[in-house]
Length: 443
Image (cartoon, rainbow, N blue to C red; front, side):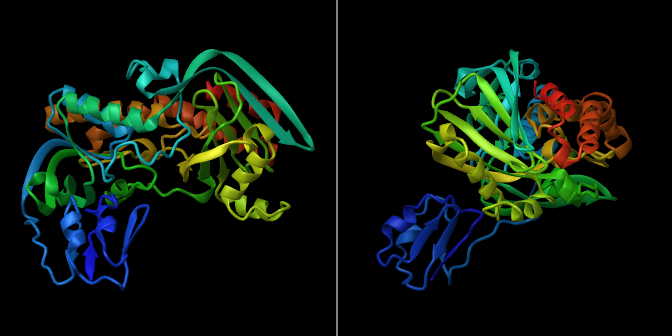
């Protein structure tokens, strides 16, 4: 029977097409090998990345002692990581930007909305990655058997195509001089006398065929998303309480009628306990339609509904089915994930390492928006890394200047929004005062 290296496999399905006994099955991001396999070798020859081998074959593994060195290693090529890599490379640092997935920007785990004024300090809007331009918002509150509508016109925002947007940010980092490597997972940290001095990676094909490698770095920026493994390995407290996590599900619905210039939000415990539902247009006839619910509330609240909402996806189905304009649509994409709506920890850095973006809990606690916050944090972290390396001091004290810059600017606003969310219990967020604060935060 052949064996599959899941970290090398690109899930292209080519092996399935040449199997004479139907022993291979492609299940999205898993290639399954069944007992019918006769080890004919067809799949091995058809695999473009060397992920399949006979069970008896010995795979050559490169020496883990091989090293490469950079000034800065950035883990995660989302908006925060890509901006950090671009800023640092432009300042003259040698930079390696690592992404564990084979495609930057995918899978999307985001409603994809940003404001124009917040975006333009980083990049000029481009039709290639703008799905819709937004000029108004509608907020509905549902409770006590009534629905109230609040409307706000003016302003300017966008619903992005994150698959393209994220890739463009990574391309800009590469053009600035950063090395960008995909499908390269970070497996651990290098340490020297207690300080972080690099990372270990698995699947170093881009570095001469090594299976594992050590990458030395003067500074590491961890931008590895909500799971935040790298920062935890470094000893930072990034634990996310259930009450500060939003569990989210979203469809891209096609074939619906809506105003392509208006975003819509719905707040109410029956719709999304502790969170809200959204409709973000993505051009004529389609929209991101999703919701987020507070992780420690939704199951209890869902059990009281008729019919029972046994999963977060059930809440989304209820929301869509109750609205004829949405119910006639067809889901062409499903995404799911968790959004941290916690306060960023006081310590965002340790010796040799800083953490940014969702990994650092730098998401707006009211809206769950995190794209611009991550980009801002990435820039601040890169500027701090440049200064630290120039000074020859990558200690926690020096890198802590990044946390000070964050907490004294954007972080201050996030703290205010966190207090606002905490002030109103989940069943009180249809209150006019909360809605007004929410409307301000969405602009």
